[in-house]
Image 1: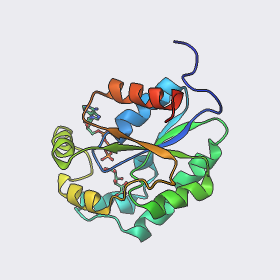
Image 2: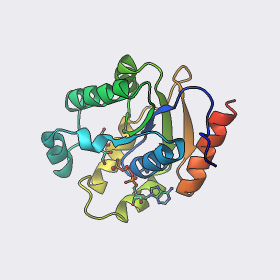
Image 3: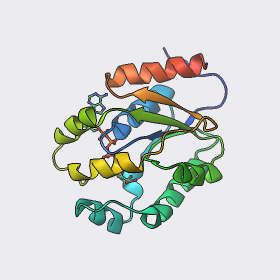
Length: 174
Ligand SMILES: Nc1ncnc2c1ncn2[C@@H]1O[C@H](COP(=O)(O)OP(=O)(O)OP(=O)(O)O)[C@@H](O)[C@H]1O
Ligand SMILES: O=C(O)[C@H](O)[C@@H](O)[C@H](O)[C@H](O)CO
């Protein structure tokens, strides 16, 4: 199992989805399996964004714009080397913004029901994101469109199974 599980250039992925869908957990696990660097978009938020969410207010497009620019710059920096970034990327325009920096980026949407994700959020007390914002995350979410490069994976399975499903998909893209 020492060889890389892909042919061609190292994958450059954004693991996307609503808060609590497992982006940080799966993004890091995928980075390890693919042998590429990992970064968490939560670490790119200006302090004002964190404070706003912590106070129970959803971010708007204006709040997200500079944050997405910073994430796009990271993707551009790791374009050749490959990388795994966990970032909500909820709207098509946000993904378009990231693609302007790194056109080959591929999205891995961690998809799940409100029920499953709310349960997971409830079991990680102390996170800055209040569970009350989950409804707004779902309301903002726009699914990947057919012309967008990416895959959708069901979160209601183990992290290992999600990683394996992704590796199988890139080995045998349909
Ligand atoms: N496939 C899984 N099975 C069981 N638990 C999981 C799975 N994926 C993630 N978790 C757990 O669910 C919780 C949320 O995961 P995580 O923090 O990775 O989500 P996130 O999408 O990065 O959230 P946020 O965007 O709010 O930071 C964590 O407690 C994590 O350990
Ligand atoms: O676009 C957004 O609203 C943000 O990315 C949020 O989703 C949080 O940063 C993150 O997911 C932490 O819970």
